Image 1 (cartoon, one colour):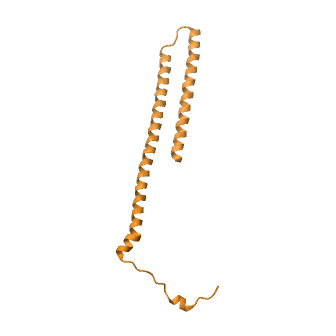
Image 2 (image 1 turned 45 degrees about the horizontal axis):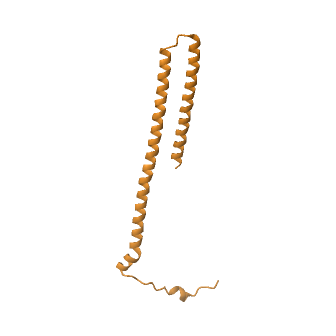
Image 3 (image 1 turned 120 degrees about the horizontal axis):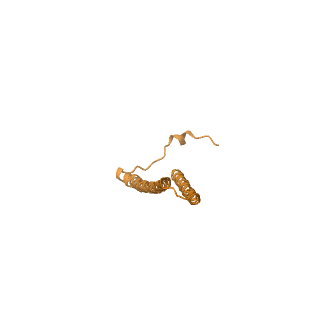
Length: 127
């Protein structure tokens, strides 16, 4: 490295000074336009994100309604069975087995729907 000469430090570089209108048109106006475009893009994306989240919530709400409907139907079926027992012992056992199998299938279906709902909730939280 060579030592700096005092003469070099004392001489400032000449800078071209622009008129305020030229300065505005050349430097500030492009920056302002770019910022406006960025703001518009961010506003559009904000609107899209809101609609995506709203759509996901609507899907989850529909799923919950389906689950609730199935649970209510299952409860109603169980209550009807208790109020109207069959007369024959063998027939009763057979029907009970069939109804138990139906209930098991309904419960398995509801469990699958709950798992799907939880996955969608986790997915929407991560995005």
